[in-house]
Length: 386
Image (cartoon, rainbow, N blue to C red):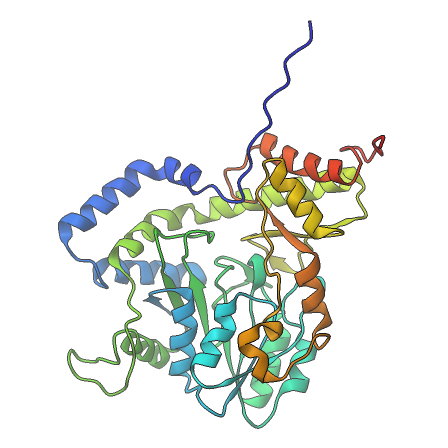
């Protein structure tokens, strides 16, 4: 008698409910405690998180802010970036990286990415420096640090600030140094989809500069220091106590979640190698601790692969479908198609697969088998009959 087929597993791109289930009792108790305290903004929970984040990231200071986007904005503001200045960064990143530069009246200047890591290529940075350059914003994309030794050498030579966009890279390392500890400051996002995710928006800025940390604390609260006295104009960039408390529950679990993400990445690497698929390029880890906020493959017929995965119950996403130099709102910067070929190719060929820690082997196997089936091969690299 034939055995019934196992049901096809559903594999969402991200399953936040699975993580919540493992910490439900502690998280629920934490939310009740905050409600009973009626202390919702800044305060002891935020201060406690700041101490714990600084220790985790290997920095002297961490300043909680309202989001990763606002972390970039207040950091650049504190460093004096404004109208007439130029800031060098990558065109292949989330919009917030460049949006913060633009909002301050400065000009974003793009340098193309390395085609292997998708992080900014330091060799492209040096040629972009002018007398108006004020800072460099390297992005640690997908959970892997940029080539920070070269970036820092360039910055030191030209007297430039370095703002690490570490929104996707908490716990990532470059040659033993944590993301957010290498530059002038580092900016983190705690958006729910991040490796360390809050129950809404939240962020932090890390730094080893005590004066800069004080400046950031002032800016996040309308430039107020002390209360009702304003030596500068800031904004409302404060971190909610509830978000801080949730993050304090989750932070002790982060390294275990990272290890699970790395194990999932290793599973994919081995399984795709077993398929012998020349059409798939898996992520390359370069001298770093990659924390895999995303597991991003480069693949032929990317858009068709995406549709096929979705039709077969596999969540996936394109990060990012259009490089920032091609976005309509930045048309006045004067860039053209072809100016940054590696970024443009990445936008056309990359696809993020599920990588969250709670993935089962059955789910991961379904992801690989579905892609292999699309290209007409089996897990052992055997070509399937048409």
